[in-house]
Length: 204
Image (cartoon, rainbow, N blue to C red; front, side, top):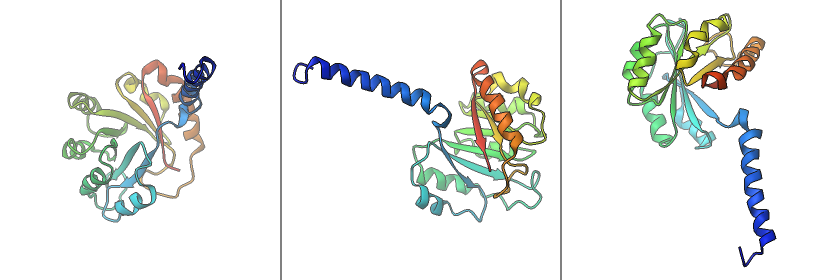
């Protein structure tokens, strides 16, 4: 500080504080970016990595089975191993698009950091949420078009994420974004600090 002078030192300190506050508040809505890959046999994970590299905060793996989309590709869980190899220090999030997610969750405990589960699942979501807590995994629920937002309320105090699916049909790329999804995301954003969850937006 003596070499650079007190006024210069104070300027540096003020810049660092100001920049930190700018980062904290200006980028509040865009601080975490996830790249999406599909857990099926047609996915080119290496190709995704070649285009994006490690320029993401997490990797979002979409797993969809025939219970949610009758024309779904066969699930390929070894995609998760490839994701781990290419993005070794990045959280892996598994979006389980299945009416029976338990079978997939039980096969992927050691490969996944976060699980995203659909509220309309037939398995007991409370048991799955508790199982995630036991294994120190982060867990979230998913809203999709056609659902009442009120159906999420019981889960809000117990999850880390609420994800809004911005398209009408899970698992279909290239769809138009749902205007209702934007409204729901705004509502959840107002609720998130009260209940302690983060809002995710996926699709579209």
